[in-house]
Amino acid sequence: MAKDSSRTGTSDNKRKKVIRQKPPPIDIQPGQRFEPHVSLIQEKLIGRTIIEFSRLDHMLSELIWHILKLEMKDGRLITTRMPPENKIAMLRILVPRHFDGFGCRAILGALDYADLIREDRNFIAHGLWGILTPYNGAMVASVRVKTDPTTIICEAFPPERLRAIIDGTKLAMKILRRFSPERGPLPEK
Figure (tube, rainbow, N blue to C red):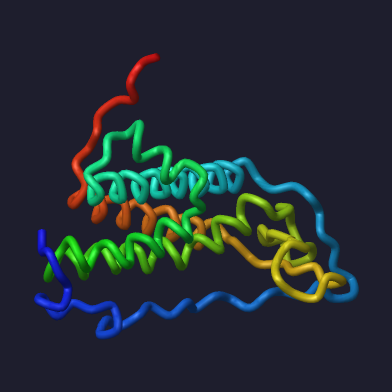
């Protein structure tokens, strides 16, 4: 662990940031209908995506606890109600102060990915899932996205995209786990 990023030259400003290549929203055309159901395979992938992001969110908390040298009972006071975007922001400040070289770059890269998929996770978890016919692809519709309140945004989430999100989330967790010791099972009450 490094004490100071000015010593190591790994400032956040010198890193290349990952740019999100998000597919454009889909407008419902005349003759198309949104049917609110999806296949069982799609349901499984949706659930797996949400579960893996939840694990990643917990891993962010554990990394904060580790860096700040907090026991779980004290760390939870800080991170329990903290949304993932705030945990990511906090870690972007803490990591360069406590890790140097490869460790710092690896963790910051995993945080970049976590931030990229955070929006997808929210859309997946809070949107209305269905099939857009005759397109017949799995779609998520949302009125919560920051846009014109009279517009419904639809976005395609085919199985390949969900699997890529799941695999990327697992990779980000694997990277973060290397720098945060496992705590073992949750304590009993």
